[in-house]
Amino acid sequence: MTLSSAPGKVYLLGEHAVVYGEPTVLCAIEQRARVGVQRRDDGKLRVNAEDLSLDGFTVEYDGTADEGPDIDVSESLLDAAMGYVDGAIEQVRDVTGNDEVGFDVTIESDIPLGAGLGSSAAVVVAAIDAATRELGVTLETDELAERAYQTEYQVQNGQASRADTFCSATGGAVRVEGDDCRSLAAPDLPIVIGFDGGAGDTGQLVAGVRSLRDEYGFAADTIEAIGDVVRNGEAALADGDLEELGRLMNFNHGLLSALGVSSRSLDTMVWAARDAGAYGAKLIGAGGGGCIAALDPTPETETALSFTPGCEDAFRAELAETGVKRLE
Ligand code: PMV
Image (cartoon, rainbow, N blue to C red):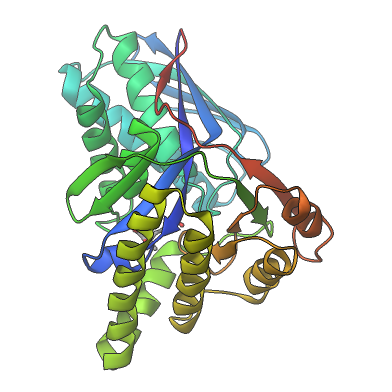
């Protein structure tokens, strides 16, 4: 059995605009997905996912299209969970040249699914890393990030940026602009997450922003303005200027909201954090529901969020300095 973990991530600034070539800044967080892998010689893939914020389920199938897993969960849920694992294993077969190999895969994750914290990227990065190592191949971080990106790209029908997978593989704070991905020096940020228990549909939200951008010049300007916010944010991050970074997060939330990707619960949590004295707060990821991130070194925001109606969970997220971790 070979075990790897990989971190989730928070978009500090710049989601959605990154789809149109603007820069984005994000950081890896110590909420992780752990994937254990054991080789099997019968070519089958068996996945056991105990804790994906879903009811635990186990599926066994041989990976062919006409012999799907026999299991009583909704198809979209299953597709979401299995598509990523399947795609990751395809990359492993490709990179190791071992087309026939099968695996027992066990997934455990602290990262809520589809909530903007990068759960799928973390599972894919950890799965590729563990399965290649199980076959005696250790990938360099860049190759691991590339393979994980290819997996997301295929599973998400071409709607994927490199941001999540690069950040999860590399750890720390990163800047992504198109295909250019690099690490950034960053202070340990006092990030507090509020989670409304829900999830947005990333594909639909991205499509909604695209149609606004096609229809209105001012929506296209809004996207460019997010790029400007990010460029200012890079300087604030480099200076460790949390007050400025918080102001920019507030601004970024307003622009995302104008683009239609916030929700009542996200706005409520953002205001709860601001009222509690956070430097700033914004929705993170695709939006529509899911998580906000606030900057607050004091306990006030976490406490306020835990009493906010509609906030199901509030917790602190430490910056993960290390991306993928090789555990066994
Ligand atoms: O919610 P997430 O973690 O899937 O983030 C989506 C981020 C977008 O910028 C909206 C889309 C993308 O692929 O970059």
